[in-house]
Amino acid sequence: MAKSKAPKPEAEADGGADGADGAEGAPKKKRSLVKTLVMFVLPAVLVLGGAAYFFLLSGGEETAEGEGAQHAEAAPPPVFLDLPDMLVNLASASGDRAMLKLSVALELPDQETVAKIEPIMPRVTDNFQVFLRELRVEDLSGSAGMFRLKEELVRRVNLAVAPAVVKDVLFKEMLIQ
Image (cartoon, rainbow, N blue to C red; front, side, top):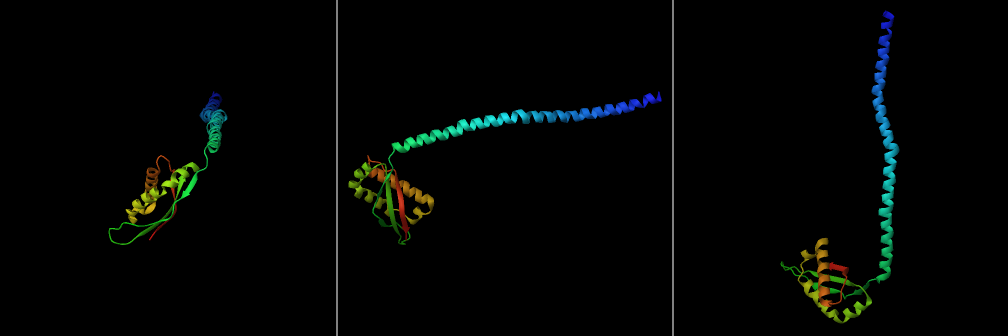
């Protein structure tokens, strides 16, 4: 019996080893779950992601390119009209003298608009001169000042040339002394 008891502890030890294997079996199950995810879920996600990219992004680029080509064919290139250089005194509260030299071009939608605007160019120049003489050096400082000046010039030129439309006023040169 002593011998029979001896094998039982070994068997329990083996059972313990089996129990350990059982404990290791849980990580094996986790590994098999991870393997399953890597083998099936990850490729499915990659395939679906690739399909989504193909249909959404590459399809959109082709559509945009096609529309861009149609738009480029339909719209004529813009026309630019240079205005004469303007030299004005800037307003100053402190009595300091400041001068602004401004050279601009108007961006027009087509050549027909040039024909409409040329006869009323003295009105455009007058509107610009009146506005520019009221500016101070501080009004023109920084990019925000330049942006506000551009927006105001576009507004004033469009009021002067209505019903014609000017797309933009482009600065060619701006000098403050």
